[in-house]
Amino acid sequence: MVAGALFVFAGLLQGQAQNLVQPLTVNLTAYDSADGHAIRIGTAQFIRYLTGSDVTKGRLVLVTPPGNTPGTIGALGSFLRITSGNTTVLEIPSPGEFNLYQDYAALTTRGSRTSGKALNRFSIDSGSVRGELQGFSTWTIRTEPVRGTDVSGTGTFASKVNGWLEITDVTQGTAVVTGTIAAGAPRAEEAPPEETSTDTTDTSTSDTSGTPTPKS
Image (tube, rainbow, N blue to C red; front, top):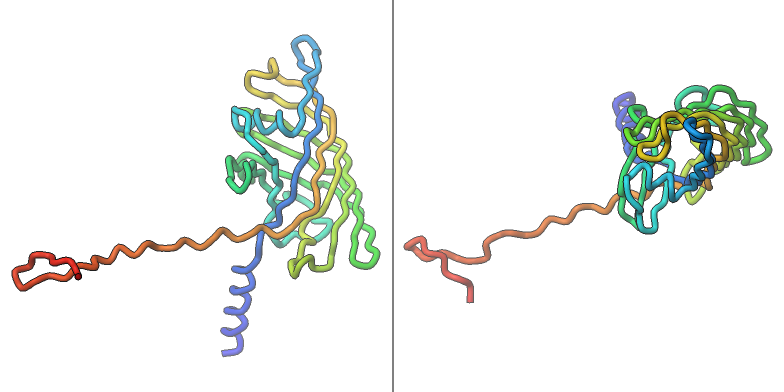
């Protein structure tokens, strides 16, 4: 009985676990392999390359599932989301089209904050954008709950990256890339609103002949 109760309780906790979301900022320069000209890629341009069009009030969001511990090595399970206001325009899923890896990490903890130095890789293959960027990252992770939510599964970070990208109709083949990728403070993802059903019950009554008769 006790084991069964613990199993149910663990299931409830897992069901209540929320993804962590944080704004992602991209500031890259790509050097085209054909003639070496520079292509500036900010967050807005990166969103356009991923979606194929400009996105009004577009935001690039990094979404990380719960369960990572500070300093996790390997794939972090994060994926990309592009939003316009409260509307999700596109998601770049993990591991099929996007991966954030952490190859090495060194942590220092003081009180409720953990600072980290890490080597991270950003891998993407969304169809219109392909590439591999890697570099040195500085992380700040909060180990105390924020508004009642454990956000220690990720943290703010700034990565100095280099690598390559291929962008449809932008680069001529593979472009050499350098720049920065930064993530803001994480927060718990808000649960989507519950669907409300519309009552379609027929409010008419029927006489003995079977013909519907409206209520007076």
